[in-house]
Length: 423
Image 1 (cartoon, rainbow, N blue to C red):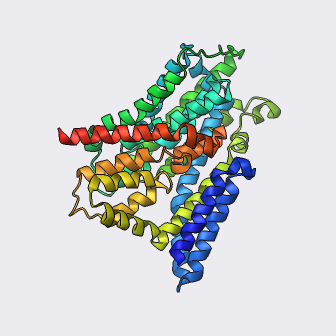
Image 2 (image 1 turned 30 degrees about the vertical axis):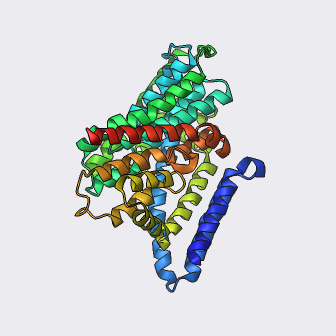
Image 3 (image 1 turned 90 degrees about the vertical axis):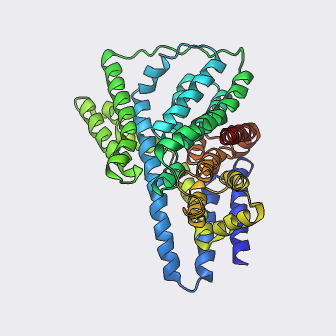
């Protein structure tokens, strides 16, 4: 009864999010309500309110780490943007063809995501595209492709996606092996949708970008902030590897250093001029409703996980499908609806290392499917949620236009993986 009620509330909240535009209610509102109602149902039927509260605070710790990471990354990107740092890159992109540009962006996002992570990459690349493209419709298509490319790029690297990192830390995979086994399937999951969208843009040209009339000092400041910003974003995975602290700690120390650099650069300017380049101004421009939306969705998923709904679901899939690859595919598609982190955590708890030892194809396949399956629905991945906030993408627009392309890429990745295993 409680399980059915929790699922009903979750689905109702999901529908309200999907129809955000017809309802004219910001998606953050139903997400927050869904999150709180799910936990309320859970605590009211529990014998021990204390245990449920403890569980909630534990999950809140994990959720906060993602939110602070998101906040830090978005602020650094806003700082680069306010100093016209991205214009330095856009002036270097010489192609006037939209299809060529789309392929360049997709390949860049794919490899950058393996190095940074899919969330940061999605934020950086979407901000870059907003500088290159004038038409809203074009930006939406490019943003959709960035979500697919960033998620595919994150799947084959132990640093690129939270789930691959979890499997790496949990001892289910090793770094070199996962890169070797998943690079081709991930590339297929990215390139096939990219080629289809590029074909849609064939023959279309980009409007020429006006050359910015910046003073030499402004250009120098922009260059400093761009190099520092990208450098600090790249420093985050290094910091994590060296200290074993969660990634958000690296992001927060990076933001702290960026704060000092911007203060030093503008300290001699008049207060009114310097104010528009400050971290305080960048924080004001960060899309807070998207962060609250993410909080609500993750709270709802955490309630389902704590009550054991996700574990039941994973168990049901195992007993019904009875095939490693069918289970992996189902979990991948499920990760488009439910966050892939608790799904992979449930799988780690269910399937023992004695049954599936380190570097078993099941773990590699799980990393691929849960990494790329999240692209099918825009709120199925952190990268999708961030891009949705930046470009104000409609849930249903993404589902109709991009969802099937992500599904094509998902199928292509699986096919390449299975061919690899056969030969």
